[in-house]
Structure formats: C-alpha cells, structure tokens
Image (cartoon, rainbow, N blue to C red; front, side, top):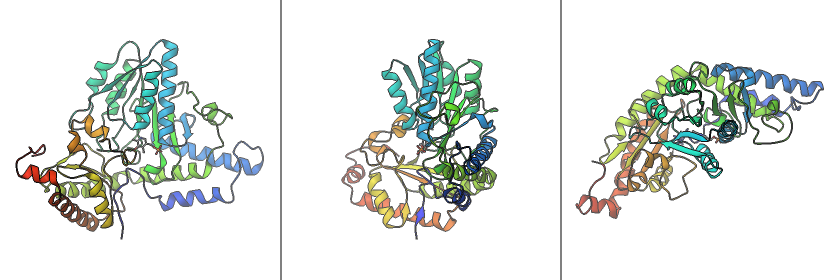
Length: 396
Ligand SMILES: *Cc1c(COP(=O)(O)O)cnc(C)c1O
C-alpha cells in the first residue's frame, strides 16, 4: 500500500475531474474558434468552464485567462505589470524572499532588464506583515507580488490587508494562489486582488493547465504570440479537456472546502503532535496559521534525501520541500528565508495531505518517521559529534 503525502507537489485527479474531461477527449473534439457546430459545442463548453471558475473566485468570466499552469500565470502577471509600470516610469517591484521560483526567476529576469526588486524578509514563523509591504512601497513601485500560501512551509499570508494597502496606494497587487486554491477562500474583489495565479493539478485537476485572473482594465501582455484566443492575451488552441477538468475540480474543491479543511486540520495536528516528540526537530512555519494539510519539519543531524528514500521503502511518498528544488544540492530558499542554517535546512521533511488520507496512515507515518530519523542518526557522524559535544546542537 502507498501512502501519498506529497499533495503540494501534485494531487491525484478526482473522479469528477476525469469524468468532466472524457467527452472532450472523445466526441466534442472541435476547435472553439471554428464556426461549425462541432467547434461551437467546444466554444460553449469553454464558456461554461470560464463562468464556473470565475464564480469560484468572485471574478467575471472575461477576467479569466487560461494558461499552461501556475508558472505561466506567474510569469505573465509579473511581465504584464512590469510593462505597465515601464510605461508610467515606475520600475520598482516588491515581493518576498520565499516566493515560488516561477515568481523569483521572472523577477531576476526583470532585474536584468533594469527593474529594481525589493524582496521582503520573511519572519521566522513564515509570515510577511502588511506593514512591511506598506513600508516598502515607493512612488515608483508598479507591483506587489505576495503568495497567498507558501508551497513548502504552508504559511498563509494576510493578502486581504496587503491588497487593501496596494489599492489605497494605487499599486498593482498579484498573488500566487496556487497552493491556496481549494483550501482557502478566494474572493478577488473582497480581497482587493488585481492578478492571481491558479494551477489545476494542485487541486485534483489535470496537469498543464492553469488560470491567470486579471482585473478588468489591466492591460495583459501576451507571453505566447499567435492567434486571438483569450481576447488576444494568450495565443494557442485552448486545451478544452484540461479546462473542463480544471473547472470541475475547482468547483468540487470549493464545495467541500470547509469539511475538508476540518478533516485535514485534525490529521495535520495529529501529525505535528506526533513528530514534535522527535528530539532536536523543529516545526517550520506558524503552528496554526498554515494550510490545512501542510506539515513541515527540520530534524538535526540527518539528510532529508536519505529520509525520503527510506520512507519510500516503507510506502510513504513525502518530500523535502519544493519539487522544483529536489535533485539540487542547494538548501531550500524558503528555509533560508525564515532563517534556518544550511545544515538544518538540509534535514527537512514536508508532508502534505489530502482528504484521501486516513488516521491509520497518519499513525503509521508518525512511527515510520520516528524510526527512520533514529536509524539515520545512529549511522551519522554529524550526530555522533553532536551527542559527544564536539559540536553544538542548533535545534534544542
Ligand atoms: C506548483 C506551484 C506553481 C507552479 O505551477 P505549475 O502549474 O506546476 O506550473 C507555482 N506556484 C506555487 C506556489 C506552486 O505550488
């Protein structure tokens, strides 16, 4: 039996999402730009999906742009805001040190093009405060981009307040809501959000499809040139099956949001309590202000990679943090941003839950992690130095 605890990397598609896709892989195969009836059937489906997604986030259908996923949506939001800023002579952008690489690497590119980037420090509990944002905004700031929930440590940012500050100062506000969608309420109007990114495969929809929400009136720059799809904002024949799967998955996740959150929080807190018994370990991120299904620890004296491999042998699919950084030897930029030392950041474990996980799986996982950490420490020279007092423990 496999225990899947890596839902922040990707999720299993729901039956509802698969069923919603099937007709569009088979009978309704038209191109929505075609004027004949098979094309128009696809166009009708596309319109319904756009309405459904808009309803889930408090937007209007024409504010929904379909993209290839969260990364493309993040890229396009930042590039569009930079273009708008450039025209107004505003070349300063505010973001945070623990954004997803889809944001950070786009910012780095904009920096090379002459933009000035302020990356806000993240507090040790994984939070950025509205005051930090407010203090960082200048006359020449064109954009603030702060993620709704972090993909590694799961902390939830005060985006409504940040949105209010940006609106008052007349600065565009983008939020990467990829991890939040389906778990936390999203209402772009009430939360004063100008642009927002979604990715279907993080809420039990298909991979390779996402959304950029852009408030009416914001001039969105295409990053893919070609036909006039998406009102000229994103060229390419629409991926109708994936769009149908995404709309169904988002509606389903939003319909069950509260009950799933209760269920996941209970499992999450059991897991946190269990793993907190491991000595010289530390929970990363705020204990309460975090995604319902996110558990993230660092354990001193072990390598996260070894822990993952041994847990995999026990049937547990876990992660050391972001899927995008695994395989590289650099420690996670998120853990460094919250002030973890390099040697601590290497010993990380992220467990992210879905409503399919059970209490039995959680109990098994607690035992398995405890055993495996103890085993790895028993063969670790670093651990021996720590125990013998040749080195000081960094985590008490
Ligand atoms: C997964 C993820 C992305 C990237 O989404 P893709 O659809 O995989 O491109 C962006 N931001 C966050 C916070 C994510 O977790």
